[in-house]
Image 1 (spheres, one colour):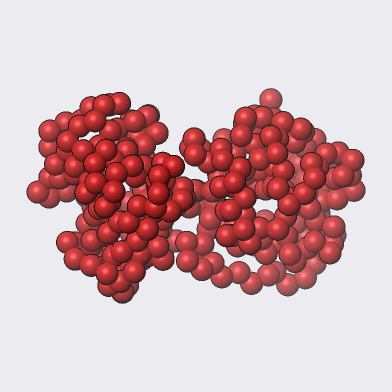
Image 2 (cartoon, rainbow, N blue to C red):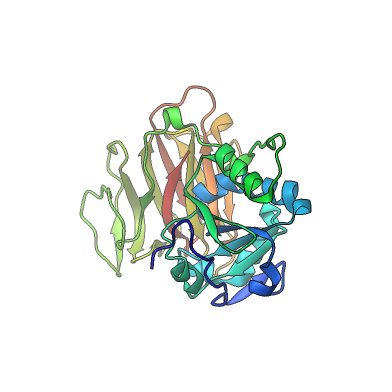
Length: 317
């Protein structure tokens, strides 16, 4: 049954673990207003909403608001509870997090989105919900109505990867690289799935297309580098360019980023220096570019200096 306003909050009993809290059920939540936030640690849309959720948790905790993050993983490596714990530390999340590796809580809510917010009153009834980014003022007012308080809204400024997108200049879509959902691969010699193959970068990439250079294996979820020196290129237009990466259980992998064939300089992202140097240490979203000045169409290229890098999805902001 689809969850909609006016039904009881489904059970959290299917969670495979909890962070920052003992398991929470009806007895612990009774009489409290509850905000449930579905997230996955690599999702840029969730990262940009998290400053608000964190802010609401702090601002209304004394009014008996309980915030529960439900971490339902999108990619295989996100099932690692240690990685989820590290993400909560990096993001400053001190509210309860239900680890939903089996998708049991996701299914109980009939949820389909990251992020997804469910607003539950003190009787355990879902009174509102919102999917995706935005609607922050309305969401906070919904919290206030359920709590029976009325005061000035909190002030939020996201920093780094949590900064709001530059929607006016965002012209590139989320782009998955694995063949399960991949599209717009511009390989001059075609592609092959689940086997190592040498790819060559085209002389010029079309807008919102990407390509591989070097020996890679295209898997269902990701592309995996088989020999050092391989690269990925993408022709995009956005202020920010991100790539979800993991070293695949190997030692940290150095990488270099070029923007239109040169070091990014002041247009480097938070995970890259001005010379374009970065280090792939853990599975997460890496911000490679934050364009300085006028946002225009650019070609991003990331080159890995050791084998084993796994790349999952480009996102933009």
